Length: 307
Ligand code: TA6
Image (cartoon, rainbow, N blue to C red; front, side, top):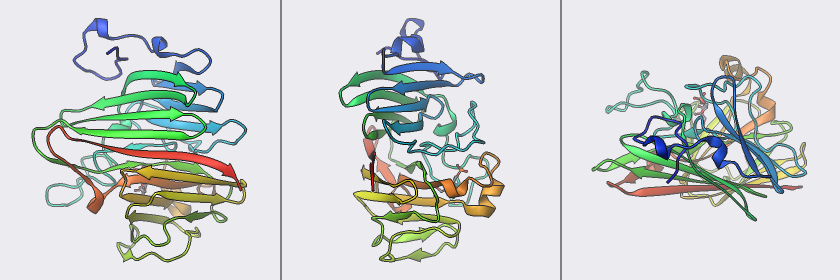
């Protein structure tokens, strides 16, 4: 298999080809920013989109005739070793703060795992009438993750994790999707009305409220339960966005609101009204236990329509 070498792997020189050889006329080209980060630029009949080999990260997705569906902070970094603030960060092999064997926070490790700040390998690109598909991978001694993204009239991600160890391992993951909204005080998130959640701000667990989620303060919740579809109702942008998933037992809902926005250097103080995170995840009681050599795939499909 021909690979674009983004990270050090046991590849022979003849196995390494340039990014340009993965380009597809009238659908996909590549560019590298001034910090050496490679990006794929998709421009096809269905959408315009952008992804980065930094973190295997979808940065932008704009269906033809619509506004961008995803939010990226104007203050985001785009540099090796730093997370991109927006789009769809890949949080793996843990979610949130790293924990040591005693369950205590391990401040020596980054929040949300290690893969979102690493350069991934480009495995393959393809274009069909379903859209432009790219397959990105990152390999570690303990695991290999592959993010196969299809940019069409819907945005599809198939995120596969493989246990490379000869013993069982537990993994957490989140496809930490930032959605662009017209006004966070006017949106509703539907589909989680009857799903219990952990409020990360208070540590309290709540049963489903029976009501759609609305926003008037910092909101940081892990909903635990399989939910086929979550809908983001945005009257300001006159659109409803559907987030359908499989292989996911957790959904995270997050808006930093005022105080937390001011504490994030890569997020503008006044950007919180323009975004909300709906994250397709497997966290805590719904983390993934894999035996040696076993794999698991989490899929998310994002589509939008006018109200
Ligand atoms: O998914 C919600 C969350 O865990 C919040 O608590 C907040 O920390 C957010 O992720 C962003 O985390 P990051 O490490 O990207 O700043």
